[in-house]
Amino acid sequence: MTRLLRAARIAVCAALLAPTTTLAQPQHAIAMYGEPALPPDFVALPYANPDAPKGGTVRLGETGGFDSLNPFILKGRAPWPVQTMVLETLMGRNWDEPFTLYGLLAESIETGPNREWVEFTLRPEAKFSDGSSVTVEDVIWSMQTLTEKGLPRYANAWTKVASVEQTGERSVRFVFNAADAELPLIIGLRPILKKADWGSVDFAESTLRRPIGSGPYVIGEFEPGRYVNFDRDPDYWGKDLPLNRGVHNFDRVRYEYFIDAGVLFQAFTAGELSAYRELDPKRWATGYDFPAVTSGRVVKSEIPHGRPSGMEGFVFNTRRPIFQDWRVRDALLHAFNFEFVNATLNDGAFPRRASYFANSRLAMGQGPAEGRVRALLEPFAADLPPDALDAYALPASDGNQRNRANMRAATRLLEEAGWKSEGGVLRDAGGNPFTFEILVQAGQPTLSSGNVEAIANLYVDALRQLGAQASVKVVDQAQFTERRNAYDYDMIVGGWAMSLSPGNEQTLYFGSAGVTTPGTRNYPGIASPAAEAMIAGLLATRDEAEFVAATQALDRVLTTGRYVIPFWFSDISRIAHVSQMEFPETLPVYGDWTGWMPDVWWWRE
Image 1 (cartoon, rainbow, N blue to C red):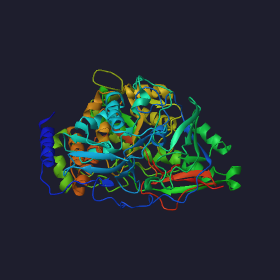
Image 2 (cartoon, rainbow, N blue to C red):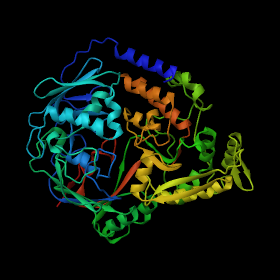
Image 3 (spheres, rainbow, N blue to C red):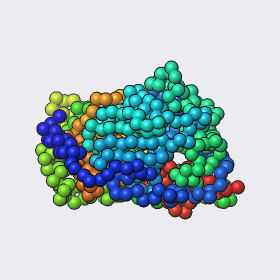
Image 4 (cartoon, rainbow, N blue to C red):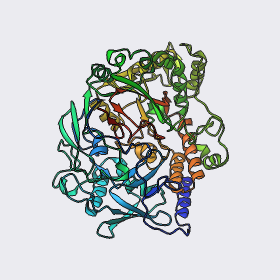
């Protein structure tokens, strides 16, 4: 650990021990900053229709497949809705607030004056789908098992838990050993499993055994890799909670799996699916003239949102020597002709991801670092690229395919880093050619639009102008996941969806432990004391202005570090759906996001 990082963490601990006069008492909710927006007697979430009818079957599509029903381990691929529809957490989200939790399995939450501990009291009526009660023993076992055998993200926050103990028949307390204002919320969002359901089963091994949960749905019929049904539990214990009124309205939600996005779209046009999220703005504008649309059976809805852009693009694996020099990464960033690619694939419809938190107040902005942001970063200036504190913007072209100005800049940067073109081949001082592979998942779409293979092939063509020899390696989903988890790639298309309340997940994304620990989302292999200090700062503070400054500083570290060649993003979601599917007029700030579709939609007969 560097001396600067130690100093930052000492300051964090001092903040933890600072005195306060706030008294702890049980609450119905907890907010990361400020107060919860909804009172204890709220009727329903603001974007849910409490009078929505129940019934109907909705059929949704996914690409790829599944071979497991345990979504919490590295082995196997499980349907993601198992986490949200079958299993529950102590607290639940209101997706119309940046980060506030309301009681779900827990009827109340209580924290220490400085959030140095958190205590949850379970609802007496909370039950699993087999009728057994959710107990404190289940809570403690779930937390420990996920930490010991689950995905790396569960162990990340648990290192800050000093102790856990049962404090009453239905209450449990977690005591922390580090300053982290988000920890009570993170613990509140851990999935709760039934201890007795797992018995002698090895949790770390992939299995197709249906887990028993306490959620509104149970896993029905399924066929690995083809489909899985989630059937609404008529005896669901929590159906009358305010958090659940107008939510979980479909009797059955069926997910069908397809080899790629093209086949999935064909299935939708043929009437086999109920809804389709369109990622291609060109097709949205001109390709929806099939009979179901012209007859009115299928309608088109555009859903705006106010969440950060997140980041997605070509990710450099800086574990590879070829990409360790930031000037090389900057050169390849200049070589990506965003304006031409966006026009070719999207008719120029999308804005670029200018940074990791663009489209929100958490973004670094294009001006130089100022005020508190500069003060946070100046101690680390020597470890950052020389322009990290200056005004910074991604290179832009005139849209011409040749991209001459940026290519000249790329050549200069490569020469500064020791690479020169000889006979049309880029080589280092030892004569070694500049070669690398772009690993692509077959049929992989981007988060916003476009087929990854098409983007990669356009980029490879552009790199030839520099003498760089890049190739595209297409593998199936299983191979891609395995190699990504082991960091066995030169470059991949990767992404990070960002929220309005970044927290502990940032360590999983960008913490230096992920350089060697398999299965994290530190795809670039970032080892930055500045990034870690900014993450520690945003986690420790309860002051909103300090949180915003730390996040903007983190955004600047990541963006100017040139770890990713950014693609585009969409500030709206485009959803085509059968006309019988309806949703409330009031939309959450996160828009089409977790907790919205199919959660608050309903079926109109």
